[in-house]
Length: 93
Image (spheres, rainbow, N blue to C red):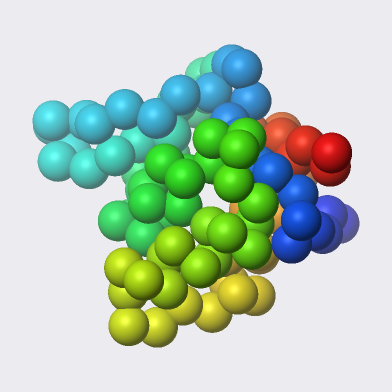
């Protein structure tokens, strides 16, 4: 079951998760316990904005300034998937 991500929620990486540039893959990767996820450029940009200060709506707005086409539902679905795996946490304050 996929959790929902509120637009007012402020996502951040879980403390045991990091993003790094992997020179062998020439891509950003998400590193978790016994996990390496190769990110596409958009996914890397989304996670770079998940600092716990910006809301999901603010992240979508920022991505809209960077890209021609940003679909709110796709950003929310991406974050919801990471929340369900406990790689991203949402502050509801």
